[in-house]
Image 1 (cartoon, helix red, strand yellow):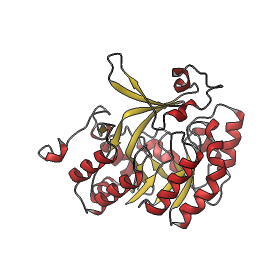
Image 2 (image 1 turned 135 degrees about the horizontal axis):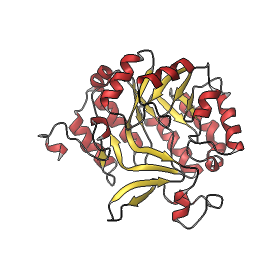
Image 3 (image 1 turned 120 degrees about the vertical axis):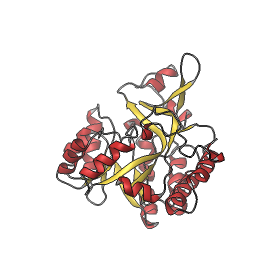
Image 4 (image 1 turned 180 degrees about the vertical axis):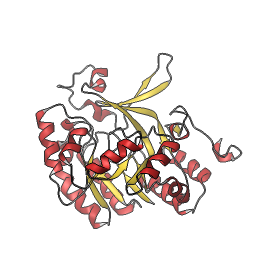
Length: 304
């Protein structure tokens, strides 16, 4: 069972971005790292000067590096960027937008969670296009994952196991607007919120998170199962989405659960210590409301 680190969705400074991936390269027990700007093309220059060095460091550490495309293309320069990424012939490209799927047709590639793959028919179409791996959307229940895996046994299926869940992306930037700016003159205001900005309901309850043009869940998905349980479902990899917490520790927790070194209740307690300020959830996986936490071992004291 592989662990995949998904692309960083937030805007961090160049130095912080570089140091984060260097730490992942040296210390995190992940197998695959998906890297590149996915959310907003205006952020590209923050990573461009460091990208080659980061890739070199990750690959020297034995990690498989994949390159992510943008999740939404609205401008010609963004279309040009997609075309440039699609020409990559050394590393696997992860498509997060239908325009990228068109560019990658007939070549092996991966599909990210921003592409809606809700059933086996959609997965088969993507496989016929050349997809060899798919990270399923985080809102899929376990029953749908099983059905897709049974129908497409040759695909490497990945489940979104940790991180705030990507829910929507827009051509407009609500994050900039919330701070009195426009998208064209945002001055990278999203950098002030390295883990997104919380959106409350009218009654003041945390509900969603804004990250530039993206809307995320407020809760953090946490799916903690032994390796055998995932294999039974037909899953070959778990995705960990970077948050502002100790991601090396998060990856170690998931690796130890997969190896059977610790039980899920212990892992849950450690995960809450590693990311203490955000509630964990697993509702979608159990066919419930996504923000819910479903305690499978109700008598375990660690699940209080």
